[in-house]
Image (cartoon, rainbow, N blue to C red; front, side, top):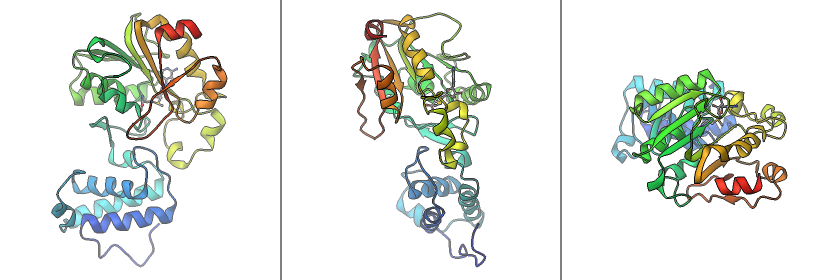
Length: 300
Ligand SMILES: C[S@@+](CC[C@H](N)C(=O)[O-])C[C@H]1O[C@@H](n2cnc3c(N)ncnc32)[C@H](O)[C@@H]1O
């Protein structure tokens, strides 16, 4: 809660609000990692959203006096972030992913996978983007990977699956907003869709946090659906199934891309004999590997 002596009377501009919010977030000891990495990032996100300012807006806009109603909304956003400990994206109801603005709410994980960078490159250099005709995004959540893949690969068709009706409802909102219904389909499925097919790329950011560790995550993560995080006792339940079943769904030369985040050791314990190829990202993030259909057939 805010101190009784109101420290908000002097807040006029976006700069005033961001500096004030950053200090309050630091005092409150919040956690970050939902598409933002610091108190400053969250402050900018929540204040700029209230003010309708773009990230790259001119300096004059950031220094201009804001209408009182906008200042009140920005303060309400900041209060909500501290009081609920929800990720900022659940307050603004949006998150940028691969340069695209996605709707999101508490029914889905906040989009933040480093796989965004791979999607922006049409999955190159791991596969020739011009040969990618079909992509399958398993565990699609908000649909961010599937829809971004369709946006960056305009000749490809994309299928996305999720086991959660709630997540699929959010994916449907994003599908409609982005106008990609002709090339993207979402299915309710336990990993693989009912309709058998062969894909050039299977990509997945599955739940991979060990069940016990999920319970110990900061409040910001507890605000997300546990179904999106909990990967079973060692975190590897969905990954094991993806590794075992994907070869049958891939074209020759096709690739499987999986995120396991901080669970690299857990993966390597399950598959000590596989020489995994880990993706290096320019914008940060790790724990994403690429494996070909032929490697899956050979090693799994
Ligand atoms: C880590 S979230 C990823 C969401 C999205 N792809 C992203 O990167 O933001 C994992 C998603 O997998 C879904 N899920 C969990 N188990 C599943 C299963 N057996 N089959 C399909 N989807 C599943 C969850 O509902 C959740 O939406």
